[in-house]
Image 1 (cartoon, helix red, strand yellow):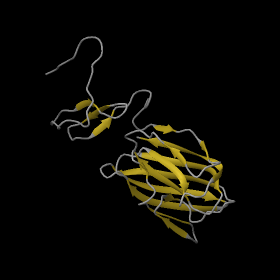
Image 2 (cartoon, rainbow, N blue to C red; image 1 turned 135 degrees about the vertical axis):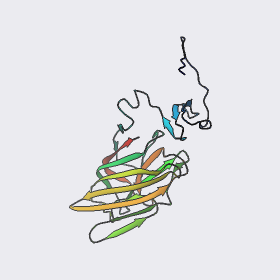
Image 3 (cartoon, rainbow, N blue to C red; image 1 turned 60 degrees about the vertical axis):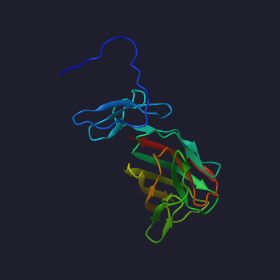
Length: 215
């Protein structure tokens, strides 16, 4: 049977916290209660998909969105907030970043409850040295105040049910190359990223950082 809705004007859907019970061979279109609210589709397996507009996702659901570069010339941390729902990969891009101390540069993640500064399983190494951290994702095993660091941290959503994010990173400095990896669970969807140092006491004095994210 074919049904259609005809008429003029707008169709209003009241926002709700979640989709209704699944019905086999049927899907749901509904409006969530985020601020601002958004339209979603849920298939008969119960999988929710955010429906993006042409302004947020003009080509495909796998579009990469580029942030605005932020100078890393002062302060102890640089935050990127407002990461939208449904993001499954975030890249943190460092160019010529330097600090005034020897604490390891790290990336921290957070949800609507704030940035989390503990509970990370993270490590980094080069051919002759290694380091671990629980305060954030690290990519180098050593840091010197006079050095400049170029790096890519690739954070990928490993499980949407537990909001588990895994990290793979590479960093270059003064002829040395470092590799890092790690994992971290959040209590809700990721909404923000912070670049800082382990302990958060060193300040940045050169370079820039940016992010990219994809759905």
